[in-house]
Length: 105
Image (tube, rainbow, N blue to C red; front, side, top):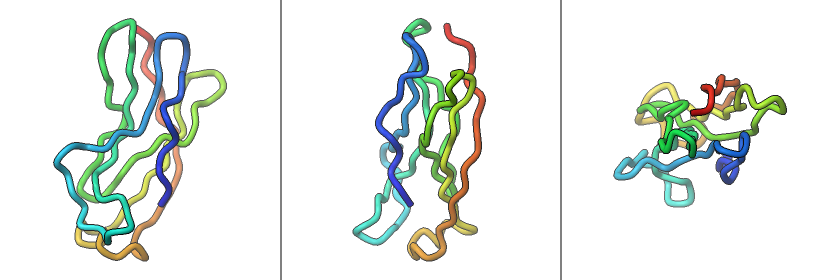
């Protein structure tokens, strides 16, 4: 599992970022991030945060990159078959996929 990138600008008014969910715990070993992680976008024109992929009991979502044309983000999903599997890092799987970005404003 890798940590998500720092916030990345999509255009002059929007940026995407990985965000830890407050008060959420995975029960992972001490040397692994324990909080749930979602992928979000902030739209400064609209003045609001938009969750692009919300963490679930069995999946975390992190920003990998933004497509050059700004139409989508590449997401790394770290996931397990069962919530109790987070306690064993060997059971965590990863994959990447894209998520379309909503229009600005």
